Structures are given as structure tokens and as C-alpha cells.
Image (cartoon, rainbow, N blue to C red; front, side):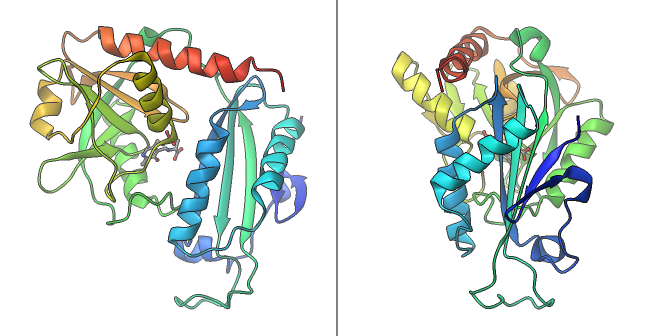
Length: 289
Ligand code: PDD
């Protein structure tokens, strides 16, 4: 079956879905994106993703190219046309096509909107086989990592470094020795004292939708969380480390820079949160449309 992409109002065969060479996304990374998980054909945590998209657009002053309700319908249509059961939807909005000039084009310019969907592996069956290795890596990004922009070069370089080291994720560490987040995920630890911690939201990290959903689940379950940053030294001393993202859900990190995290197996708290998140997913996946 051939894949279909939505591009500026049209559903096109994936191989024909092109943007102009002077698209500002292509020339300046002047745009934002979202990755939304799809399970059993349903968009997971759609509201959180569309809220964040609106915020990202506002922060870089691009007007929403489509009303929220229409956007939701179109996302579903792309999922349907691609017959995606388990996978992701990718959505990208750039400032549009204009003669190359750093300054904004006229506000009347239509933003470019591209949506694709692709099949993936689905929700993992257990946390043990889902566990990964990570490396640590200098955070070389800009000062507004809270905006989900398509300017991902430092993230790309960090992820490639992880791959070359035989690992999945790169945990980014700033110049002061503080952990910010992963190259494509938020990072959590159970520290040496047994406290579940993740960095509070600020301009140095992306406000993850998985992070937000898990935070709510923790509150509902009465599980304590300290939103308090941690250093590289605290990361190394942690009993448990895990990451959260739209594609990783709750994912244990059992090796860091080649050394075991804790005893090198998935810890009890990570295991519990994986199960909690699995239930959250099932609740949305199995809801009648
Ligand atoms: N990345 N931090 C960064 C830098 C990210 O790129 C992501 C997600 C997250 C987690 O956010 P969320 O839980 O909303 O997925 C945190 C996506 C999956 C990507 O770029 O493919």
C-alpha cells in the first residue's frame, strides 16, 4: 500500500509530497513540529500535543494554519488513509515559502503544513525488553529548548553519537554539569535516596506530553515526585533512570556510558510507572470512537 501525506490542503502520494526550495523550514528551520503516538488507530494524548503545538506556534509567531477541530479531523484522516494501526503521526508547520530573507515575510504569507503517518511497533509488552543504554553528551542547543522547533541539529549529532557508542539515547548535560533532558526524550531518575525526580519545566527542556501525562498519573496514584533538577553526578549515582517520549513511552535506561544503572536491571519504580502508563494508553486505545 502506498503512503499518503497531507501537504497544504491536499492528500498526495508520499513520494510526490514536496515543499518548495525556499520554504523557510528548509532554509532557516523556521518552524515547529509534533510527533503524536497512534495506537490501534487512535491518537494518544492528542489534546496535550495540540496544546503544545499552539504554544510553540505562538512563541515563534506563526499563525495557526488551521482551526484545532479541523486539524484533529485531518490528523485522523491521514492515519486512516495510511492504515496506521500502531505508529506515529508527524506534523510540521513552517512560516511558509518566501524569498530568502532572515526577517519575517508579510504576515499574509500562508504557513506550510505537512502531515505524515507511519506504522511502528506499538506499545511494548514489558519493560525489560524495552530497556535501553544511554550515553551522556554535552548539551549544545540554544536557549529556548521549550519550543518544539524543527531546528534539531545538536539533537541529531547527540543521537548519532549514542548510536555509534551502541546506545539508544544521549542524556544532555549543560556546561554547569546539570542534566537537561535526552536528545529526544525527557529524563527521570530515582535518586540514591529513593526519590523520584525530574527537572522542572524551564527554557532548557521541552515540556514533554508524556512527561505531563505521567505526572498526572503519579498524582492520581499518590506517588511522590520531586520536580528538581539533578547533576551528572546524581545521574551516575541514581538507582533507576528512565526516559519518556511519544515514541518511548516510559523507557528504562539500564546502562549509562557503558556502566550499569543501579544493579543493571529495571528498577521497581520504573516498572510500576511503565505499568501505570500502559494502563493510561489502554484507556485511550480501547475507548469507543
Ligand atoms: N521527541 N525532549 C525532546 C528534546 C524531544 O525531542 C522529545 C520528543 C521529548 C519528549 O516529548 P513528548 O513526550 O511530548 O514526546 C523531550 C519526539 C518524540 C521526536 O522528536 O521524535
